[in-house]
Length: 500
Image (cartoon, rainbow, N blue to C red; front, side, top):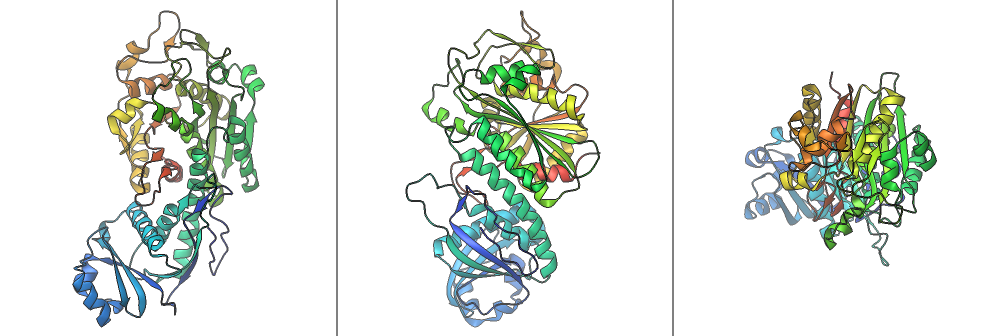
């Protein structure tokens, strides 16, 4: 999507991969333009009741609004025809505007995008002079407009749409839009990478995507299989050993200041067969192209921070591998030596994400001495059983870190629910032949988190399990069907407002 703004050019929102249903050209203006195609009018219940907004004085609009029994209920959308001098008027209900969060505004924007697509509108005026979060509405339109259809033989061409956003304060709205556009570009990148099939996204091609961020000032380092072996990262090496497409450790560093860095770590399994503990559900294994969504979220966050030119020091470490079956693959019962020196008995080759993250955690601690670490991973089916796709799982014993992540979750609209990670799970992870097993026997999400905790050491650490959150099966709010980019908005917000 290309934006045309009076004060600055923000360029192309989508990456080279992304397509869109509609291709809005945005302008922020302070008065209603002459366009008479489609008007989008957000209305709170108080606005409708008072009837004092200038447009509500139009007799045709007021008459149709009453006939449609539109009362401004939160999330309601009604389309009127030939009202207030417009061919169509899309009424968006806000309910009690004062109670809306930023993410709710974005979701309403997503609903507006869906309605404009359905109406085939070409010129749209969004009258947001009386709302508090115009840029968030536009942000939702951007996020919902995403499509991933370039692998189809006949992909639809995005339909151009001129969108004039009427605001009370043009400069403030444009400044906020610019910041949100950076986040949207990060989300788009994460969605693109997660949507790609494994034949197109390998550990090396993911590394290539990271290298593309160097033009934004991001320092990118890629460790190949020889470097991984030389550093003693036996867990990451073993998981990738069964594939002809070898593992990579990708480090993307945005150094916006000289403070000790925050570390973000992402699981990057570009395809997960389960190894010799083979996944047998046909529908499930098809989705294993998305088992690198944590790594995609980290890279998308780094891109967002770089585009914002954020005054933060953040290093993203993404452990990339294919978990395949071959004569070289690691086996159930093997004992691996991690870079930290702990040995791990493999009780399931399908519990590989925690293995690659363990070596990534060692690497970032040794080479960057971060002030804190947050890892993000599509890690366990047990998390899906516990929380479904409604929440991602949050695991940490650091209260301040937990509260900071929960606040970022609330602000971004990417929900978290805290789950236990105490030492009561230790007995489940004991091995007779090694320091640790790589699976527990009961509480799978918490035992996996406990395993990772053994590699955090004295560094402040939290784990986010986003299994079930990486893909959406239907359009809703700001999220179209497919990869969600879950974590980019959350982690960007968190990094900008870290715990003390």
